[in-house]
Image (tube, rainbow, N blue to C red; front, side):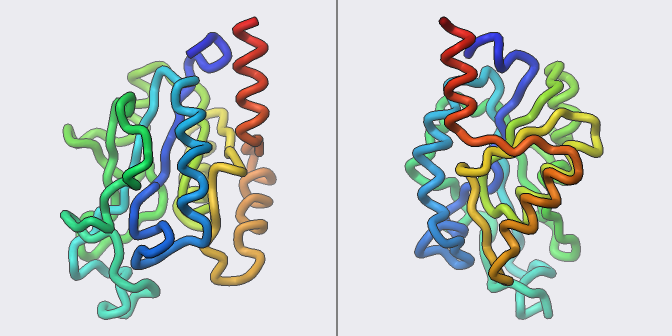
Length: 201
């Protein structure tokens, strides 16, 4: 970690098996972000991971008249983080949408094991900037970025370290546009690598 990323946190949004190829709600090429995310992780002193953590009768599932097939059910392999994700330096884990009758897309709605919100932990750690990666661009990543802005953070969305569901063919692009027009900075992992390398030179 270098001074370029002091007062910053890397937020890993829902990089879970069910959102990767072969999963219950697979995002096309969702697994391809994992090597990129792994490359970014060492640049940050604070890395936070999040998960969908649904009960089996969650309101978002089709059996309960929701829009999605069952996914990321608590305690299942599908809810686990992708096995190739480097987790050694993850400092905090947040889980969201864990009650049957409430759905959440933003990671700021999640809680850690101590019952703290993401905003509480970030502010306790003196974080002013968040870098957001993960799945999926047009849902949980988008809502996390927008809430990050709402809570007063400088937000960077790492565009090559996320993938979209694309229920509509342009949903991912529309999500990126909404992030940018709301005040988020769209960057690539290469830009982060170059900034980090320059700061270390």
